[in-house]
Amino acid sequence: MLRTTKNMKEKYEEIQTYLFSLIPEKWEAIYLYASVMKDADDKQTGELFFYYLPKGFLKKKPINVYEVPDRFNINENQYLEVVKKLYNSIKSLRQDFVDTEQELWSSLTISILNFKFKIEYSYDDLPLDEEENHKRHVIWRYKYLKIGGEKKEERRILDEYFSNPKNETKTEFYEAGLYLKNENNRVIFDKEDIKTTQEKVVIYEKDDENIETDEQEEEKKDLSNNKEEIIKSQEENKEKQKNQILNM
Image (cartoon, rainbow, N blue to C red; front, side, top):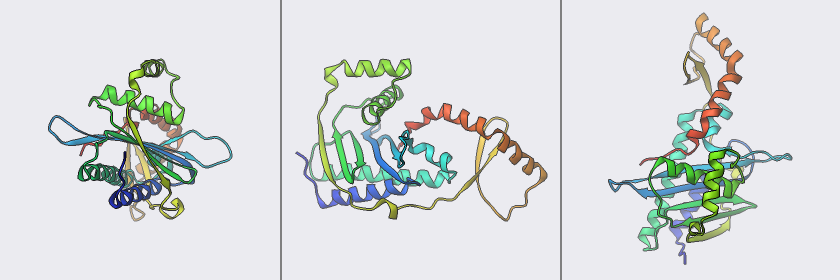
């Protein structure tokens, strides 16, 4: 049975603060997955991804955290620094389990909806390889977000998982009311412009004092004309970036 200390409750509040600050619009629910493990060199490593459901009258698809900078034209480096702080808080939470001599979890799922904060701790033995990471991501998205499974590869992963009763592993839960109001915990990130080259899109920060050359003006016109094609190409490759590994 879980024992919750004052330090752990403070970590829960800290995690909420970071989560709320990373969402630049009104939302209805948040779902986060994170794992913390040790690699062959005994260094902590793991993965983190989360999605939120935008608020609105019409049903909207979940937004992946790693799509937010492009979607809202904000500074990606600043944004990922906050993501890193969020992951460090989760690692610190795991250390609280070490300090209180409780069984160590390998991954957790946080859900925030209906003014409730819930954590599901899992104790699976998680393999450290890219293929397994991808499988976990596919299964997790389907279980918690009800998305995925349309592609043949994803369908195979899901069928294999749900047909094996051994995949039902030990979990424990913590649930409480929200500590904070999300409207008051947003970070203002710098806006960004996008400059295109022949092969890739390069991000750079705005500088109102810069004098633009005719060539730069022409590049901006080209970007405006081709922005939809660029974004479409980025979205097709975004799936590979969604399950970002945070090596610490």
